[in-house]
Length: 269
Image (tube, rainbow, N blue to C red; front, top):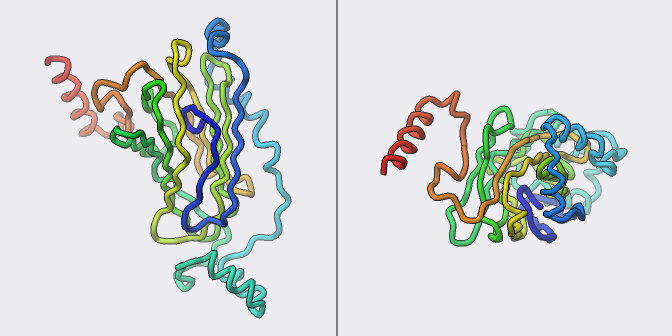
């Protein structure tokens, strides 16, 4: 269940990664009817506390010392094979413009949901990482795939991965971990497209879900954590304003006014 919910599949890489990807997908065997009958209502804090207790058991790796890009290039420079491998990994990086910063910087620009025959749902990431209200709505049984757009700066990020956990009525229904790869700094953003999946369908699949998405690296450094909610309905939303909120309306009065006027005109018609 990558961001939403769906079938198990493996990811494909793009440009700057190291070619190694892996994907684990866990679905808790509870059927939908059982989930509904339990009717457990847990607060977000208790849900996410449970998630913390089982956070990435295999992520505590003992890694070697960290180097800046310039130090990487200087090391083993007499080894021809290593030199070529480093050049391939770094690609078109302008080393003269790279500082001496050890820590890489990864900025997740947007998450997009791509569904055949539908406009892309582009979810801009709020500054505080937590969208207000329902972030998006999808139709049950619809095919979709996810697209991540992100920037890498300062240094190479090793083992960037994506994790996603989904709850319904307080019960964890799915957990996904996806290895995206290793990326070097570059001016252009990276795009990573996940394999196509299908939202669940049926009476007990419809409703509201809560979820937590994280982007971490081999050092277990978290670059983004989003806690959000979404809906799965019988049909797609009737108008675009129902699909998703891209901005915090409290801090965007102009956008808020446009949204209110649009909603009012739709109600009047």
